[in-house]
Length: 229
Image 1 (cartoon, rainbow, N blue to C red):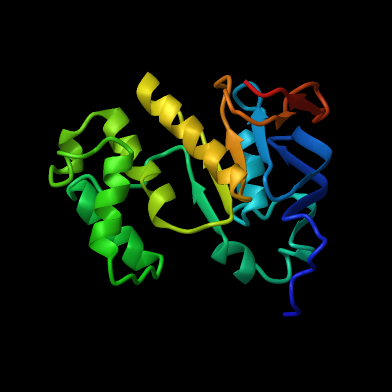
Image 2: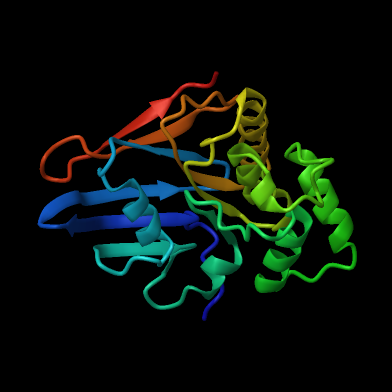
C-alpha cells in the first residue's frame, strides 16, 4: 500500500446510500473529517445512526458509495484504518465475570497492546474514569454506569487517531458526562478526530459539526455547525 496522502482528510464519505426493509436510511451522504474535528451524529430512533457508523468502520457492507481513510479506499485495504481507530459500540462489550482490571487486560491482549507498564496504564485508565476502588470487583456487581466506564477506560489505554463512539454518554452521571466531554475536547485539541452518536447537547470548547439523519422519507440529512460552549 502506498504512503498516506498528506493533504487528504482523515475520513471521507462519498455518495453513501443505504436502505433497510425497503426504507432508505441515508442517500447521497457526503462529508469529510479532518484532524482536530468532531462530528456529532444525531437523529430519531431507526434513522440509521448505528448503521452509518458500522458502514464507516467496515462492519456493514450493505451500502453504496465510498469511504476513504487518508485518501485511500477502505474497500481496498482497512489495515491502516483499523490501526488508527478505536470504535466503541452502544453495548459495553465487557465480560461480566471479570473485574475492570481483568477486562482491560483481556482487551489489551485481544487488541495486541503490549506495554511494559500495562498494569500501571490500566490502573491510570480506571482511575481516570472514576473506577478507583472498584478495580477488582466483578463487573456483574457494578452499576450500569460503572460498566460503561470500564468501556470508556479504553480511551486512555489504546492510542488512536479516530474515536468512533456510539452513545458514549448512556448510563453515566453528570460528573461522567463532564469528564467525557473534557476528554473529547482534549483529543481533538491534540489533533485527533471523533465521530460521536449522541442526542446529548455536547458542550465543547471548540466548534464541532452536526450530522442530522432522518430528516425526510428519502434518506435526507442535514449538516450543521455547532458553536463552542
